[in-house]
Every structure is written in C-alpha cells, then in structure tokens.
Length: 243
Image 1 (cartoon, rainbow, N blue to C red):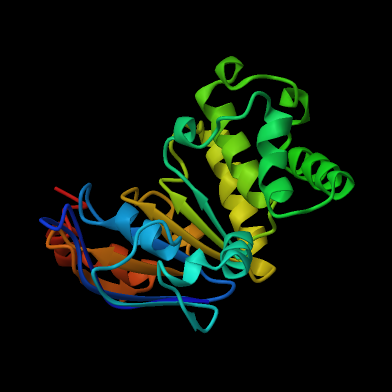
Image 2 (cartoon, rainbow, N blue to C red):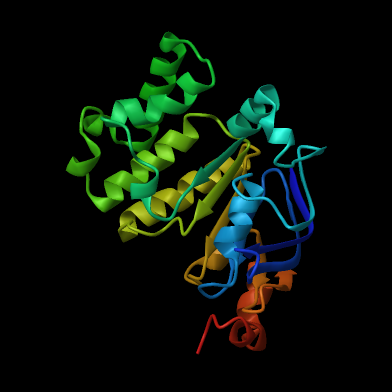
C-alpha cells in the first residue's frame, strides 16, 4: 500500500532523521516501528503520511509515486488523504474544532461528503469509540485520554485504508489501551494496514505482526517478527530499547 525505498531525510538539511530507510506497508498487517527517542520513527510516519518529503529515495502510495509536486493535484491529494490517516502522539496538535462533533465531522466535509452522510459517519464512529456523551464538549473540557479518543475518531471517520499512529498508547489508561489494541486488531482483520511508532515493548508480541527496528544512526537494524525482536537482546541493546 505504501513503500519507502532508500529514503533519507534531514531537518534543516543538517540534522539527519532517516538514512536510506526502506519499508513496505502491507494491507491487513500491524507494523510497529521500534526505536529510541530521536531515531526517526515519527519522521518516517510523516514521510508515509505525505507530510514531509524525502531528500533522496522514493515513496510510492497505492502503486503511484508520491511527491510534493504530485500532491499539488487536488484530486490526487484528496484521494490520498482519504485513504491514509495519521494520529499524532499529542492530541492537542490535532484536536482544534469548537466541539467534538465538529472535530469528527471536519474531515468528511473537507472531502466533499454531504452533511447527511457526514452526520451518519460521525454518529457511527462516536458510538464505536464509546464517546457519544462527549459530542457537544469543547476540547478544553476533555481529559487527555478523551482527547486521544476524539483524535482517533477524527481519523477513523474517513474509513482509511492505512492508519498511522505515533505512540498510540500515550495519554491512555490501561483499560483504554487494551480497548485500542482490540480495535486495531479488528481493523487489521478487515484489511486496514496499521503502522505504530513506539518504544514500548509491553504486549508487543500480542498486538503487532511485524517489527521494524530503527537504530540511533537512523538506519534500519532489523525487519522481523515481534517474537524474534523481543528474543534478540543484542538487537534491543543496540537500538537502546533496553538498558
């Protein structure tokens, strides 16, 4: 669905974040991007989401090259944004509308869905996430965990084929984290690709199918199964995931 080949990226053209990284995102697969803080996990998500563009290497989305110039085409951009959803680590940078209802409805309305269809989708996704009672609240009336659920709802309402998460468990209590794990498993079983950046090893072998480990040199150290990654202490030490 998405494919990076030898992608490199540096902030301000000086600070390396990715160095010749190649990753494929496969339909129905739950992929964890593992690595210490600063290794490039979030940057790789932003590349996959078309928010930043590699200095070198190539990115393809659904079989077509994805470049900054290509996304200037309104039709291609709308199609891509409808198919790829990105949930940021901090929901405060994502939740901005006056009410929860407005927040969840924003994406579908921007892509031209009718008010009636948008209202139906909004109601369905709020019910799915169990946050119907928040519908008229403003963002400052929400807890951190509630904001996270609203941010997730604003992505799910688009029915994306690829879901990108930066630290999906952040701001969630244990019950909500278990709920999110179950939700992502259900979405994956229906064919949605899920990519989550994390350095949390807890329950990794239960919630993902594949692991890409990024090193502090911003290169890929391993592309393997969660069981194999967790059993390789030398790999975890090299990636600064254990002490």
